[in-house]
Image 1 (cartoon, rainbow, N blue to C red):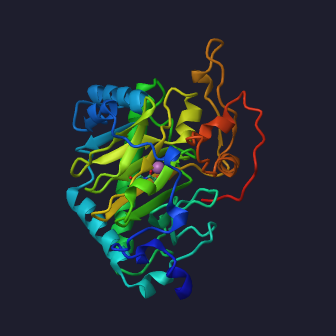
Image 2 (cartoon, rainbow, N blue to C red; image 1 turned 30 degrees about the vertical axis):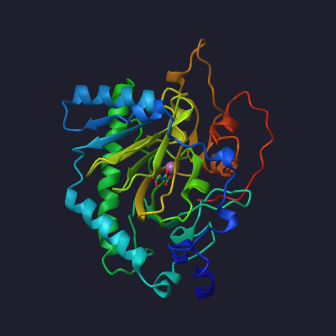
Length: 354
Ligand code: OGA
Ligand code: NI
């Protein structure tokens, strides 16, 4: 274990003159986000203290247009965000020996520290370390989480409960906006578990030649991201990338592929990526609302009609994830492609990676 951890990214010296070859991505896959159109557009910022009718409309509009939006006045207290940020930094700042016990390349382990992406790749690596923590439902048992720093379990545990509450509220607003009953997204589809990715992106000697995370769509129901105060998240929009400017004390919310499938594409899961920089470390915390593996998800009949036939196949979430865990460089990785109804493409079944 201790030998293995020396290969993780956080030990790569920030002052190293170059990055290892395996991190270098072909130029064609590194489209910069500096064109005029992306610079002029930013993600909608939604004040959640708006009257409910206005809030519902704002969330639905932003969701339909971008699949992504930022929320302020969301009800998670600032001190909780600060404590979470601080304890996550403290975790990554610990000596390697203290982190070594959490380090694992075994994708079946729910709680672990690893480097790069969780998707299968074709050998290329990504400039990111991640502490992944699973909050099982309904127990919320955090005993398998790191005991160091000593207050991590308590702070991250209450953070997770609060952020899950916010995610469920956003799902209620979406359900109402779509004309569904408010608790439509309660139950198995949001009740598998909560998964937390605490992302650490160290400064990178050559940010123009690598990425922190490849272009991907989140595969679960909905994601609530604490973006940190350093920019790095980019969201696909009209063939370009929008660089997200973090708003203090806000969250970035985006739809996962399961929400796209169940709404038959009314709400879309939009591709995004993380870029690196050479100056400052960046941290973000992604909270994923994960359906139960055995939950069977397909387009709801309310979104299907003769003029608008089902666009996706119906399958269990476990099956879905086995099919959609490969990062396909060059295809721009819209992983929904393989579940589109018309697709006859042969799919390689890989081991479950979550
Ligand atoms: C993710 C993700 C973006 C970021 O963890 O799935 O997209 O800014 N993170 O770290
Ligand atoms: Ni993501």
